[in-house]
Figure 1 (cartoon, rainbow, N blue to C red):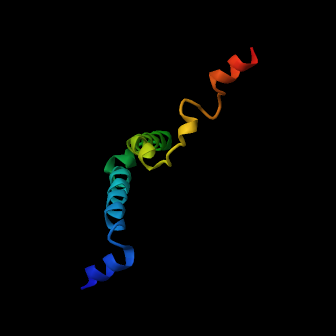
Figure 2: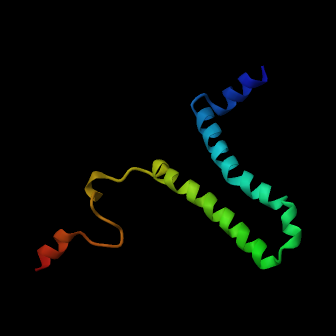
Figure 3: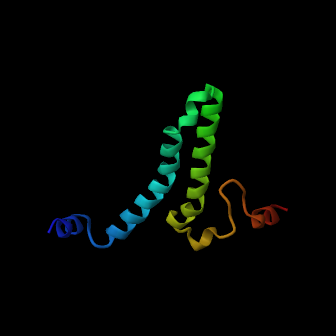
Length: 96
């Protein structure tokens, strides 16, 4: 009964998305938590600890990077081939 109220309040279409992003968050948080409770931290100096956690967080962000284009809004067809920091080559041809 409690599950049906949860699905009703969130919506049937959002439950898979919440589960998917929750699993992504778990994949990113679990390695940090494991490293935070490591017994080897007691024998290390602060620069080694900070560097180790920076590496763990960096690898977690690399895991997230391929997922970002999937959640980005679609670009209009008129912008194909253009980047925001570079004008199109047709603009240069028109000036010449």
